[in-house]
Image 1: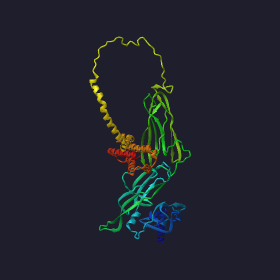
Image 2: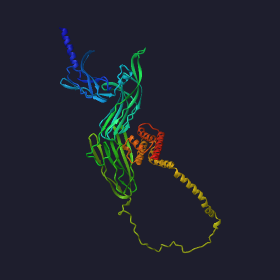
Image 3: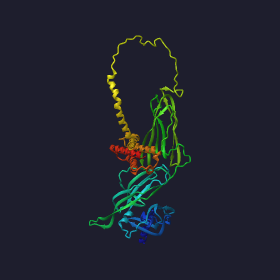
Image 4: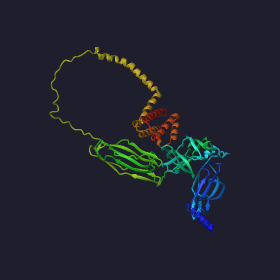
Length: 586
């Protein structure tokens, strides 16, 4: 009788312990990367008794080749009771791609519980090994190169963050790795994000525990709408695979194999900005911004200078739009603005400020109004255009020439008035003395003038001959002209030598301005591939094109890496030589 009571109490305790667990439905897969000709085991397990009405997900990209099969397990170890009920399917993919297995559902105590979503990468058909312990097969199943996107459907001009991670399980080791093919971002403005080394971390991938390292991070901004493809990153990796045997000391013996791994191709569907309610002054700004126009001195004298600063602050595509132009009265002389950028590129986007500073110099006394300025941008969160309008500014010139009433000054003629003292300084007496004269025919000046034409003739012939040789030197003339042009465009960059960020910004702007002047296009809005196509169309040789693109890429890369003054000088000379070569060929 006592035995029955103890048994009942024990069963009641086990039941209460199991029911105290938080109900959950977990989905796991036997592998998360496979060939299109391989099969996959999917298991949905719950930890709660009394679960009912299990509903499998829609395997729309897979066909079911086995299951569902059910199993129940229950254990009690060291006072801890566990319960598990699982539903298992064997499925096979229908095509290649990156797919999500949707959640399954089950009813527990009147509550509907959902499982987690599982991502599966399906590659091309593979040779299925006869031996499942084949090292190459094990390496493929335990290492995954993954590209993660923050958003797959951004607006044109909206930032997208991409991160490449290498996942590897505890079952294998990595001895060496090298990126053999970097990802290509055609149709995007892109900026690599600096990383502090490559630390190894622990995380979950498709419901399984992995170690991983972040290999590459970049911020992308789509420059056109439509379907934009990010090509895969490829790597060669030497993998240490356990052989199942141990040495004399009990250490696991491994075999090293070299395999190529590739991330899945990513597709971004960039949405065009809406045309409805699009402001006329919109120049492509996308993000969340503030706008301000300020004047450093409102009161000044004529010929003194005042600075007008036009500034945009915030988060968005700060490097990809033009700032509004200010309008000033004709009486105020205004100079070309000085551009300044204080920008940081992180995984959260582009943050900072961009400003144009104008120098204004008044000539006449008076009070002048600088009309209000407006700036428009598109807010992707609220999906609407916004316009910021500043107040009017006033310049009060306190001292200076009065403003002429007519367009040109009028000179008024007056009659000459004679007074008695007007001629008092005229001399009325004279004193003559004899002048000493020399004979011109025997003077030094006579012989100089005599022989000067004779000497000048051969000199003129020599100079004319040299001029003809110089004019006939077409290649030399082109080079000299190209050198002058290169110095003209690179003068601003030369002034910033030693100031890394300002130097590379000026160098990049000089290269784009040169192409803009030569090709008549806005090169800031096109990719390196488009620039290559345009230069090839102009019959520029590939070596010069590749050098030009390399310097452009160095301008972006060098801003976030340590650079010496010597390297900047070498980069300047390289850019100068490239512009010279381009100009000779164009």
